[in-house]
Image (cartoon, rainbow, N blue to C red; front, side, top):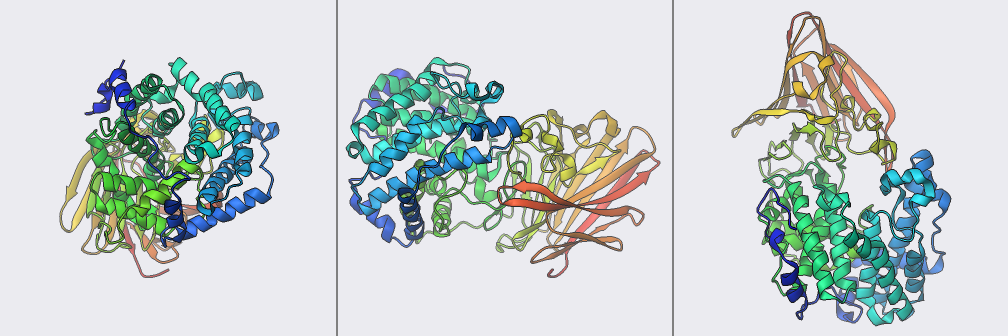
Length: 628
C-alpha cells in the first residue's frame, strides 16, 4: 500500500496496473548509447570536453587487460570485524568494478571485438561469495564470514545493489556480444541476490529512509529490473514499491530543498534518482515521471547554493569541503528542469575532470557513462549562474551570506543551527565557517576516513564529530550531546544591503551538567568593512561558571597579544575578543583528522572566561588582515 509523505508527491499514487500497461509499451528504459552506436562513442574520444577522461579510462582498461583480477580474500573481509578497518577490502572491490567499467568503455570506443577480459571480470563479480561489503552487514557482522555468505544475500545494501546495476548495464550496452552463459548468469545472480530478497522482505530499512541510502538502493533495484526483467508485471511491482519509497527520500529535504547531508551525498542520492527518472520517462513514453514532485525543482540547485568558492562547499557533518557537483546530475536536471545555470555546471565539472573517475562513488559504469554522455548534451554557449547574496535553508537551518556575490573568491560565512541527531551527525549546533580566497580559515573539519568505530558508540570520541572539534561553546566542562532532542532554536535572521545576522538559542544542545538556562549565539556579516562577529550571551542556573568559545581551523593558529591569528595559504585572519581578561590558548592536534588523503592536523583555540555571576557575554571580532 502506498504510504503518506510529507509533501506533494504524485508518484505515491502510482499503481501496479498503470505501470504495467505503460511498461508494456514501445518505450526503452536504457537511453544511453549501446555498443552499436559507434558515432556516439567516437564523439566521446574526440570531443574536447570528454577526451581526457576517456583517454584515462582507456589507460585503465589497458592495465586491466595486462594485469590479474584483484583478489578479494576472506582475511580482507574480516578486517572490518577484527580492527574496524574497511579500506583493504573496499579498495580491491572498487578496483574490480572500476576495471570492468573501463573495459566496457574501451570496447565501445576502440571497437575491440575481444570481449574475454569483460567476460572474466563480470564472471568474477558473479562468482563473489557476497556483494555486500563488511561495513554494511550491520548486526550480522558479529557472525563473521558466515554473516556475509548464505544461499540468499542477507543484506540488500548499497554495494550489493551497485554490483547488480553495474552488471545490468554491462548487459544493456554490450547485449549479444557477451557470452550467452554470462548473460544468463547475470540475470540469475541479480535475481537471487537483489530482486527476490527485495520482493520478499519488508524489513529493508532503507526503503523508508530519508537519506541517500534510499535513493541509491532504490534506484539500483528498479533500474536493474527495467534492464534485466522481461515480465512487465514484475517490473511494475518493483517500480511501484521503489517509487513510493523514494518519497521518503525526498522527505529528507526541507521544503526549500536543503539537506543536512551536504553536497557529496546530494551527488550520490540525487545522481541515482535522476538516472531512474530518465529511464522511467523513456520506458513509459513520459507517462510516469519522478520529476513531478515540486520539491525536485527546489533541491536541484542546492549544490550551487552551498558552494563557498569554486570547488569548495559547506563542510558541515560528514561533508567534504573540497568536492564537486556530480556532472550527470547537474547536466540532466538542468536540462530537464530548464535551469541552464545548473546544466552548464555539469559541463564545467566535466571540463575540469582529467582523471579516470576514481572517486569513492563514481568509479562504476552507470555513473561514468551518464557523466560522459549527459554533459555532452549541454550547449557550450550556456553560462553559469551567479551565486545569491544570501541563502537560508530552513529545513536544515543552514545560513549562508556572501559579502559580494560578484566575487567568486570573496568573503562568505556559513553557520548552522539544527539538532544533534541528523543524518551523518556531528555535535555542532552553532558551528560556523569563515571562508575567503578559496580557503576556510575557521572551519568545520568535515568527515574523517570511515571505520567501524566511527559508526558506533565511539563516534563522538573523534575530533571530527565531537563538539570540541567544532567552533562552538564549551560550557562548564561540558560538550554538546548527541541526539535529536539536543537541538538549537533559530531566533532571528536579519538581512539588509550591508548586514546579515543569524541568531540562535543553543542551551538545549547541552546536557544538564552545563548548567545553562540560555545560550544565545549571533553570527553577523558586515559587508561595509568585511567583518564577521560572533556574539555569545549565556545565562547560567548558578554562579561560578566557566565559558569558552572554541575556534577550529586546519590552518595554524597562533596567539598575538589579545588577538588570535590564523595563517592560511592565501590570507590571514585575526580574531579579537572584547573581553581583555579572557584567557587564550591554542592546541595543535597533530594527525587528529584521518582522511582518505592521509592525516591532517587540527588547530583548536580556546577563549575562556571564569565568571562568578549567572550571566556572561563574549564577543569575537573576526577580520581578514592581508595575505598570509
